[in-house]
Length: 353
Image 1 (cartoon, rainbow, N blue to C red):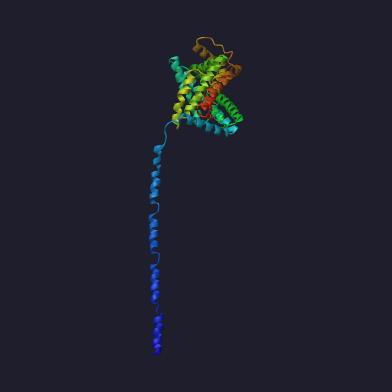
Image 2 (tube, helix red, strand yellow):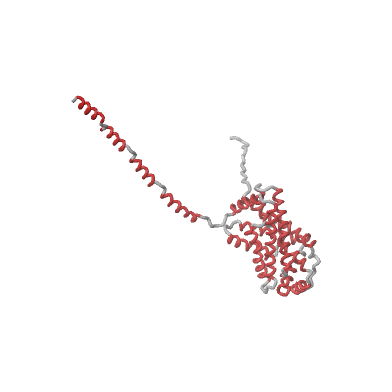
């Protein structure tokens, strides 16, 4: 009996009833709420963030489509100067060739259009001026380096974006490239025999244009060149106010058309007009057509390479530089980017009360 009691006692003591409760407690203590937390975390996943990302492109409504203001234009030209200062010499030269070729193409286009116009002389000049804008449009859109337009980078020079040596190197290399590009177009147009169009009328008009340019006085050529590049640089200025290509094209027409119709002298355009005339004066058919259009016998004694460089290019070069740097680059820098000067005055009292 004692053994049975002992066995019962042992059995009672060995029953882990409370342990089972403990196990239940452990089960109850399992992170059930953790599961809920996980669910909350899933619910908190950035579903709304995705909606926010989709809604973000509503910002284009705030895009400014208006033209840049004059102070902004000055700062943009200043920044462009810094970019040009980093260009290599070969890159500047190649882009200069492009610019010379583009201007020459615009010049030959204008010659073709006005060669046999039955309009009034003023209207004929306007039509030719508008089609000449083809050259400047290609220069701007193509990013070419035109010497006359590059006078505007004097703004960046005044802001110390480019050194004196670098700006002179840039001008020199781009000018040489402009001359090479112009002569390439002269050669191609001559070989294409465009001068023979309309019974040599086109060639006759080209010869008249060239002969007129080498018979200007120094003062006349210089004054026309100053006005010309002031308008060219003004075209560059207005072009920098545009935000797209269409705006740039429209802004170029009136300033460029204005200087061409007014008969002003452009250094790079003359690199096409005069060499073409020098070549064509050896063609009897072209000379006969030119004299028929002029109604008199013409003197071509100044239409030589000496006349080209000395009579025309020298004064026109000086005039274009003055018009571009002084009337445009320096003037706009002084108005919009010059350092602000603060003056203070102290008045000394002679007599104290």
